[in-house]
Length: 158
Length: 167
Image (cartoon, rainbow over all chains, first blue to last red; front, side, top):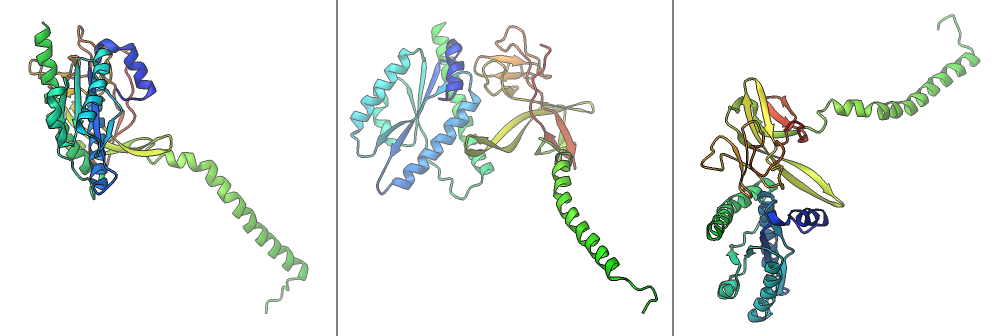
């Protein structure tokens, strides 16, 4: 489900089925890396939207968590931990972060959720069907990761 | 010179009728076009969207067919790609929507190893038989939607998915 009123309504009426949160992490650079930062944002947006389409009924796609390049990574990590507490408190058992920023590798242990790092892909000069093919390939791998996590967790609970 | 001479009065009435006729035609033509237009457009195929799937290549095994169309969301126009599971049953073509009737995930053909001949929803383990009927005891409460289809120049055209009434 997406972060739009109509789907949030569905979420509120079917909470017990939705146990997975996906939070895109956007690094915003307003300097020399501005274009790369925008490319990464486009990639993450398309990817998370496609992922949401596959798993509409079980995951809620949160609005992106954004931060600046010059922000100290400890501070950013703490902020995300605050998000995590809030999300976990709302009853989400699985939390996934999707990012193109390598820096999160160093903060993975501070988070309970799963950080998925993907190399950004520039879509320049690609038409829509090529974009879909690229995203489709990436998401296929994520799908099995998600189902694996769900499966592990259902085994732990039983 | 012909013997029947055209009088000034006759000449004027001929030219006036001619010019008047042109003017009337100029006014009426767009009006007629306007009135007839919806009829002409319906013949072009209505809301059916072309897919790249050749009808001759279809078998009794469901295949994934993607098709793209433009969708307007407030002022934001985007290209939307939809998917259908298409297979042949005798002479008939069956095109099913992949949207799970439970909470809207995307279902896959043979996604569950234990039930390779069923549609499977990975979110809450919902299952549908090949004709799209929901399997009792799994979360979905309705059968998969069906796309109306058309065949044109050997290619498959799909319309808007419609829900089925019978469960």
